[in-house]
Image (cartoon, rainbow, N blue to C red; front, side, top):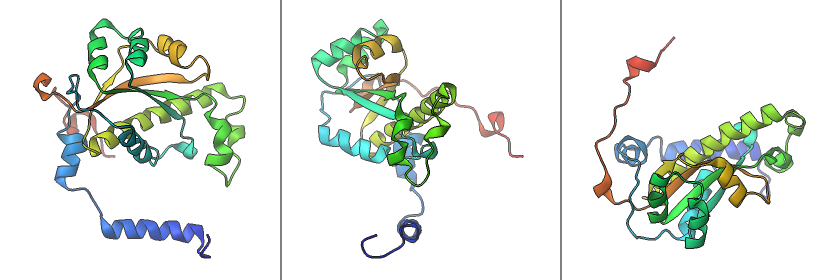
Length: 216
């Protein structure tokens, strides 16, 4: 580093400083991002700025991925023209949900993500792990882009927005409409904005810990 500090020692101290400043979220923060948060499918007309999208991305990209592969790619569908293109892929019941949202994010992944590992994982050449191994490359991309999509949803909630993920669409149509030029692959869609809570219904059941967890 410019000040002569060993980067590894600096990183270790940064974590100590973080834990000294804040060692856990309070109940209100946990409620906002997960425990009391809800998926939404109706929206107010309050806009979401491009600056807010950049902030969501900056938070999202800090989340961990295996070997720092960062395979997710994000397309923010905002204009009426882009929404008309996206609507071609949707099941009919999802069209109004998408069109009424200020933004619909296409959470995608780049099959060529591993070619950037010289930048993302510079201290060791990991590209041979993926080169010529399409199944391994696909599994890594799909798993980690899904993780990044989850980080994205939590980041949006943390900033006070609401989210509604959607899987009722044709990946093939989305890929043809939006990614024919770059080869990216769609994973899922996520509406983001400020929800109209009058469309909310009671929360659906969840399993209890003892139903599906083991400590061994």
